[in-house]
Length: 100
Image (cartoon, rainbow, N blue to C red; front, side, top):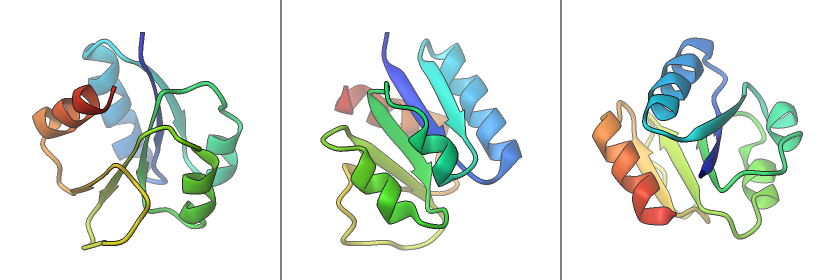
């Protein structure tokens, strides 16, 4: 089973996305900040909002795929995908499937 690490400082977004991803058959670990995310070591894909100190979180993912969900236009990040919020669930699920 693919394990996703979902990081977002918005508690409502974190809970909603975690529920959707779990119902899609993924194991989902969650964190509201970088410190909480760094406590998780066993995951296959990192899905994150651009939260404070996000570059250290990106660096900690190693070679694992990273999906950034953001409301901003962002370029040049060393990540697999940047998806613009609001991101349709089907697009997020298709992106995850493509990366694993």
